[in-house]
Image (cartoon, rainbow over all chains, first blue to last red; front, side, top):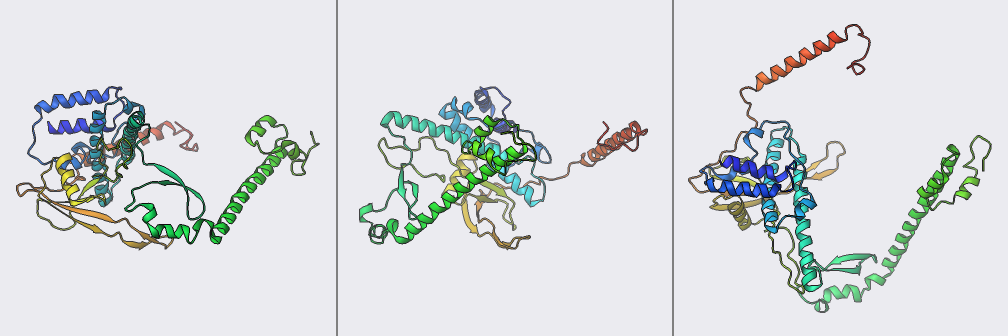
Length: 257
Length: 150
């Protein structure tokens, strides 16, 4: 019976070809089974391994991961239960993968790990959504970690997630010194870095512009009957009239334009 | 018992109401001969001995007597092709002692079943038969490549 119970748990984790009330089914299945389920003598360390019938298989078929929309309609209790099902499933897959690697065997369907992890991430997303909704309703703020816009030591803007300080900021002389005395942000080195960085960004932009212009000229050369509106939509920054008149855009035919 | 940060204190005092531990553990074969009631695990680096005990007792329902942990540093090795230095990941080992009455033997997962060789021979025979059929079908046009025919 324990084997059956484990089987149900495992199947419920990732199998998708069930209808929307799959979790409900699974919960009722658990409820039905728990009446006849007795704690077996053999230790549950075997939960770390796959079903015995899957041990020598080369192809283990499973469904897809749980989607966000499917999880959003579940209750918190259901999500909580499902999390532990997935957690055990993931541990099982890690164990089997390790053993396969040790024996130099191919681990069958390694995408199962990704599916379980995707499901777990989705559960976390849903729980987080519910938390933020609750705190926005109660206090007008999301209960998330507050994020501050700061200028970092390189003089660049950065998102700084706040954390708890051991002593207040103004008492922390060591931290303040670097900002106030040295003047990190206004120092010569930072200004030079910032200037060069901006130059780099500008040159990237300019190169892209030139590259696109060149490309459009060659396109006009090779395909003189091209749809110009679509070309303009693809490269909105390029001046088509100018590109048409250039030498590069002329092919070995009488100019049309 | 998870790697997540606890929410900062703000208005409304946000807390983790739903507890979702994200630690992982994997059961591995003991590298040395151990007592039959000692099990070896790899686990998340953040796990403490208490975490491991609680994890096994609460989630897996396994009675735990003692937990010992150690961290093994990953090896530094040269990449085979390029020669640059690669460091393998560090591993946290957990040696879990079960009660004296319990025994755990690591199962042999890749044991050959009885029917396996027979199955192999059967599939080989089938392949032979289908190849013969293919030759038979295309005997009149031996110069046509196999990918062209059905």
